[in-house]
Image (cartoon, rainbow, N blue to C red):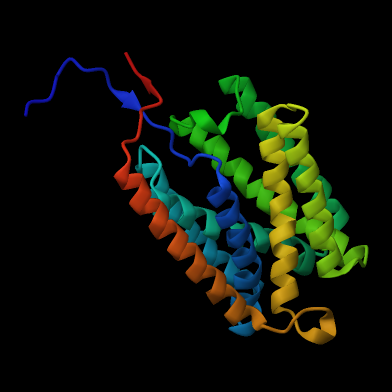
Length: 262
């Protein structure tokens, strides 16, 4: 009935556990990021600049909502992931299409930016673990790293599929095989889990984007011709259903605090 005024405040992890449904929804989110960016910029005729400004503003609102939560809340977290996937795609598209930066340069540049984020993150926190995102500073580093993984994944995927000419399907299969190798390295050879997680997180971006392009692009360009609208809606509905399930399960079980703060 009464709260203990002497009880220590607690901190909760603000991001989800890494499970099968985590990777499933992550793959669908990156697919939506690819197809939705194309739909808004091309099909609706907004253009890259207007689409980028609008989606960045929407993302900032979603991130503000996410930061206002002091524990993991499925709908706000995954909303931010979907939107950051769109914005990450648009950043790369702007650099390449509007400013003439090559995919080789963007791939190297985002690799350096991501590495720098990890170095600074570790220098402050002495960990890169996603299991201890319970402070605002750690969450800032986390989302900054997520943004760079999406932009890097977009650059790397387009570089392999378009510049190297492998096509969407072969590119998706190639990145998928690398992810399988990373999983084997973790489960069989006990390679560091944090390293494996971030490598897999980066590579799921071009994997999902490649299959998104495969589904949405016209047949004459190597796709299956479903279009960006159908592909985006299909995956958005699937994401919404899984997030609804996650929300229900999150409410059903008690969430343990990460630690007590004296």
